Length: 95
Image (tube, rainbow, N blue to C red; front, side, top):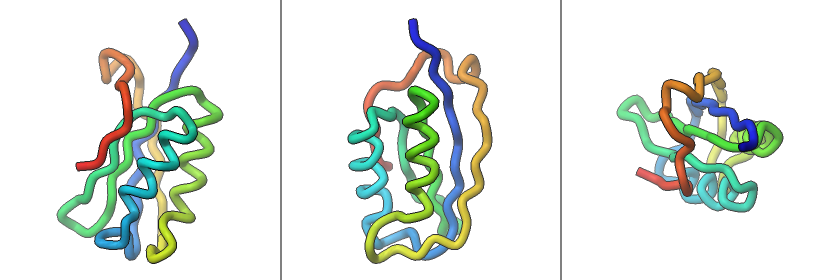
């Protein structure tokens, strides 16, 4: 079984209503990263990224770019202990 990592990212800026989550899902799928992207009530987007370390790192870096209409002001990345998730998520969804 290969090692996998999980990161919780909080993305602030103009990231809601600009196809940010859909773009994140597309990039995650290209990288083979599982998890989700969802809007938060405070205007940020939360992204859970799970997968191979290099792929997760690539997605975390991509979050600064976002969709063409977005403007990212900050990306907070925190390590999530994979044991707290139980099993590795499958697929990447938006909520």
